[in-house]
Length: 77
Image 1 (cartoon, rainbow, N blue to C red):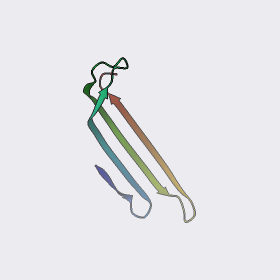
Image 2 (image 1 turned 135 degrees about the vertical axis):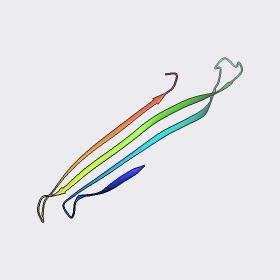
Image 3 (image 1 turned 180 degrees about the vertical axis):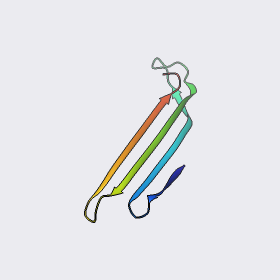
């Protein structure tokens, strides 16, 4: 999901983006002693967020502020 646009025409703009990641990755666990292998699922959940604010101070200079959040978890860790 993204959203962005001007706050003040030709001066100040914003942009935000968010992403949700949810996957179930199949894995195989092998017994090093030669026993049977086990198939299971490794659930992964994550959030990503980005925001940026840009302001044109004058013809040659601008000010930018940004923020990034990357939060990931694996269920069962």
